[in-house]
Length: 366
Image (cartoon, rainbow, N blue to C red; front, side, top):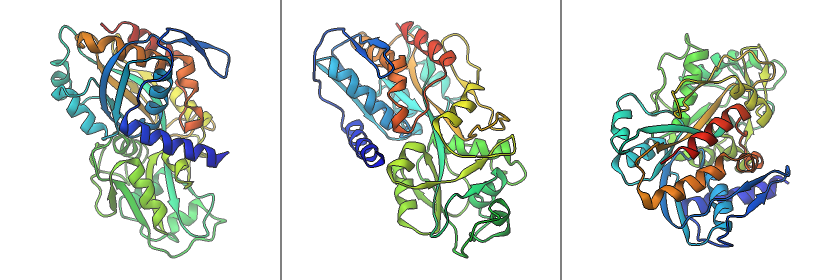
């Protein structure tokens, strides 16, 4: 089963990078999901170009494939260039929407709004991407790490796998004296922003670097994209890195259990990640659906390192020849069927309370 999933992910990743050619019927026919619910696909023709978050690359590929199987004359290109690059292309007007794992910065918001004639740039959470802490240490399985230990590892304060801090979290494990090799994103990334936000919110004493899209801690090895980080971890014994869950699964990497606010070590599962997102609060106004995540969640069994990946799009002012196609794709993505299609790809579906808000916001795009 896992081999099949890995093959599918590899295919989808390639598709997302290159874009898909249209196929299938151009009728607005409902398609039926595994759960029995149906989503009407509002077909449009033309070309849409988007880029940004690599964390949502596999999700976007799945949605593009499903949409184009129903709609002829459609070309949708999504380049997984990283959240920072996606935002910049949206601001520059070369992307019709951007994927980002973190919200626009205060200084970026007015620049993005300027591209939306009569409207503003809004955030639509579309993908819940648990952030995996993946490792490659010979002889070590079922690794578990408290947030403070994780902060010390990535901050360069803990440098050997048999360090007392790691031993304290794993009293029954046989830990080698291997040097720790940390791997981080070299490009500006919303995954980095969310990972460092988790460290800063849960381990203030041990992580004093705050949060940002750019990696600030000294040392370690940089790699571009979540796929790049996964490749580096897989290639080197003693390595550990953070990446969106689907990339850890695609590379068949072991992932650590992470300490949560309830004092448990939680394994990464869709259900465990969903428990954290269910407690998130919408802090945007109107159709701007920015989420505030409680990384110190005390919900039993909750996996605490999660990110909400947004589509950043104009509420109004999108070019007339792009509007229907963008709405058609994002309407499918926000549907129950579109969300359920992601479960096997290493994502957690949006909680229904959030999904319905996103669906309404997409319908209001004009």
